[in-house]
Amino acid sequence: MELLSSKGGILDILNAQCSAIQPSEDKFVRDLQKDHKSNAFFPEVHRKDAKDSFKIWHFAGPVQYTVQGWLLKNSDPLPETAGTVFGANSQLPLVKKLFAEELKSEEASAAGAAAGAGGKSAAKGKRKDTVAAAFVRSMKSLTEELSRTKCNFIRCIKPNPLMRAGLFNRAYVVDQLRCLGILATCEVLKAGMPTRVTYKELRGALAGLPKPTLSLFEGQPEEVLIAASMWAFEVPADAYQLGRTRVFFKVRQ
Image (cartoon, rainbow, N blue to C red; front, top):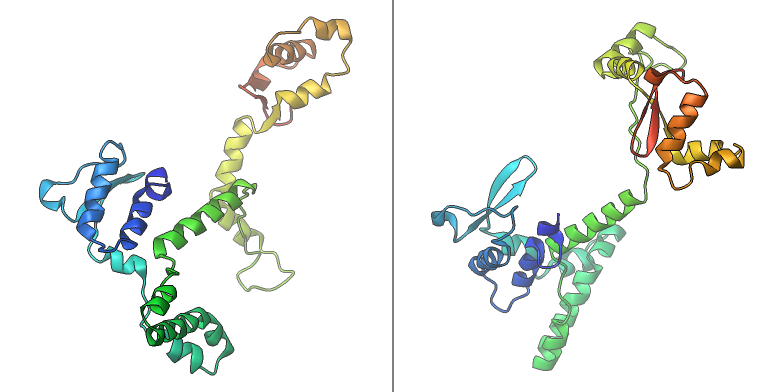
């Protein structure tokens, strides 16, 4: 992700080349090779492909990309008269709204051309967003949203093949659960230790112990107090396991 979307990454270099006075795909590849040749996820390509290709080592393995047409695709230019054709002439309010910015830009360009070089320069002051820039912005927004979210996976089970409300077909549902691996997962959880309680939670539950008892464990790791408590309450040793931050219990413990 850092190689692709960070400042100085592949997409940033692509945007910079699109903004250059004389953009060049050859220069784009040379800049990539110069800036990222020491990156482990940016392996070298064969010498014959070095002019217009580069590689990225993805999770599944290395993938080679050829940059032919990238600058044009990234700039994503619309026809010069798109704003007039769709923004001014369309009878649909949504289409007019979508092409309002293009129409303003075309009108400003026309006014600038009529006024001379000064007006033309002002009309070209605002650059259109590139495809890569929009993608990076969208990806960062998604990443921030996911970091604020607790993800849960929901499996949808059809209660019957007829799609009728209030009708529950037991065999049909069990077959879906079996095919989805839910039944096998439940068996694994039953055989394993599905109940997990953090040391912090257990420490809070043990806060009512006599102070002289708690003082014996001052300065000790939390798992020492938890292990001693399990022994004191005669919890079978094979019914739980101590992890780094929590205790794992077997079913019904």
